[in-house]
Image: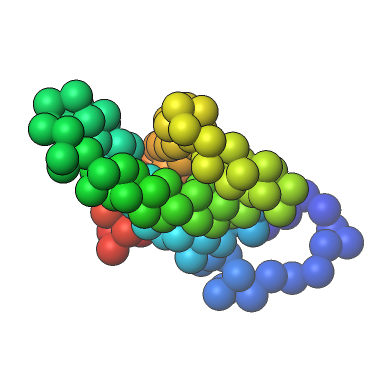
Length: 139
């Protein structure tokens, strides 16, 4: 019961929906989306790190294939960063972070920063985050 006597009564279904923190809309569906996008970003980070080592260790004739793979991973990570930033920060920051994610090396830093923010949001809402992020089906 509220302390405000002028507040309109709430329905039972309104009480059962718990508002989440850190997501602009405050819905569980968007929190689930944050977990899904974070998992994709973590996979992109692992592929980027493997690709950096692959560039060094692989023979020169295979390096163009790794370079094309970098381009594809960069495109996917840019989309994931944009979608995640839309849920967390809004449209303007989503566009800026998406563009920054396209720049080599800076893009990896953007991935790490937005991954850290997503991890913090998920943990603030009581969700366990592992090596590959949170399990979206448990949200």
